[in-house]
Image 1: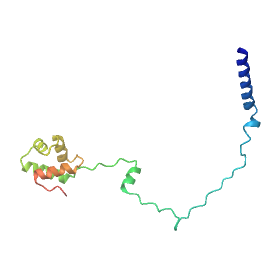
Image 2 (image 1 turned 45 degrees about the vertical axis):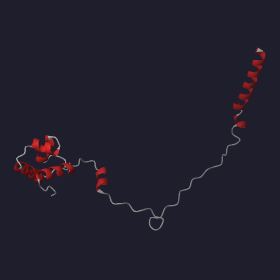
Image 3 (image 1 turned 90 degrees about the vertical axis):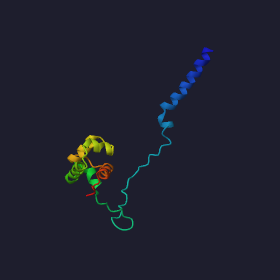
Image 4 (image 1 turned 120 degrees about the horizontal axis):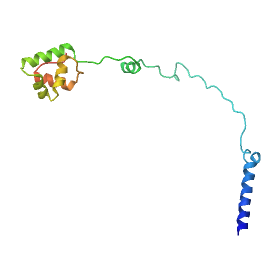
Length: 137
């Protein structure tokens, strides 16, 4: 039995060694070794029916994306800040009381009155409604 296993594996080994050692005979016969040439594609027309669309003008958002400089942050104008402060004082409200009525933190009202807050349309609308003033300037 040992001899039959040895004979089987020796035949398998001989078969595979013939396959892989004779590379020229078995593995390369199906290859196509023809020379391949590259040609430059035809240039597209610059105007007319087949032309690519013209480039769009850069928009403000595109310019902002391309810029590397720091951009100024839009804050509440000084005139609006003064108007909020005057209207609040005329109604005899503190910043904390106004903040409680419009459901924001007192720090937000303080920032709006100092002109350092980034404007939020919802907050400005609630301030205008509570104080009875027009802030749409």
